[in-house]
Amino acid sequence: MAIKTHQHITNPALPALVLVHGLGSAGTIWKSLIPRLSEHFTVYPIDLPGHGVAPLDEGEEYDPRSLAHAIVQEMNTTHGVTQMHVAGNSLGGWIALEMGSVAPDQVKSITALAPAGLWHDAPKQKYPPSIDARILAKISRHFMKLAYRLPPLKALGYKKITHLWRELSFETCRDSVMAMAHAKGYAPLWHGARGRKFDSDIPAHINTSIIFGDYDLMLPEEVAQEKSVAPAHSKWVYVENCAHVIMWNYPDLTVDFIRRTAAAS
Image (cartoon, rainbow, N blue to C red; front, side, top):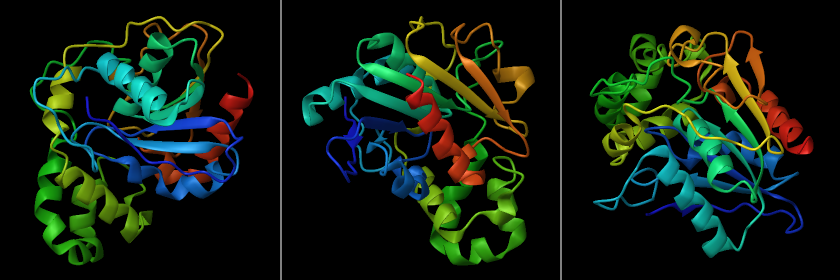
């Protein structure tokens, strides 16, 4: 399975941190966090299959558990990393949780930022909640600067993802639009997750934080924040005035969450 890792090293002695993006995104979503995270970790943002620069292989299983296996294997074989902290957002948060289950002797801590998979009822619809954003991204990529400067167009693309859409920088919007527009793995990874929920076991020695914004419209509490599905030892945190992509709204706070979760491991 094609997983692409990007490596950021300031000190080889620092522990490894794997960052897993969500559906239709890419490793670039962590860009604003890398400078601060690199002070404390060797950082590995990854591109999931068919996302970013990672190719999409036909005939592979793209369910979250299989993706978790593939990331651990990639870290082992390509980078020689066998001990790692993990953080992920949305689908990436679900995959991060699965990594703790498939490699409990290697994963040191998990920071799940608005993770998917904690459904009350596993979704069965053909298309994910972000399908409108994908369609718009395919169109607006051809006139990004204009779309960014016109509030109605910017709102159309981001209002469902974050109520703080007016604050998003052009760079953030450009990176997310290009990632979504070119994500060949969008449908295969959704089909791999559809009809499933997180139901794996994570040992209690893996410190696990689950963090949601109180204004998450993509995975709202009444649909997708079922505590009984999550590991019993997880620490739950709710962030006020925060939407689904927590690192967009509060990058410094996100770094602190990851650091504190890792430090407690």
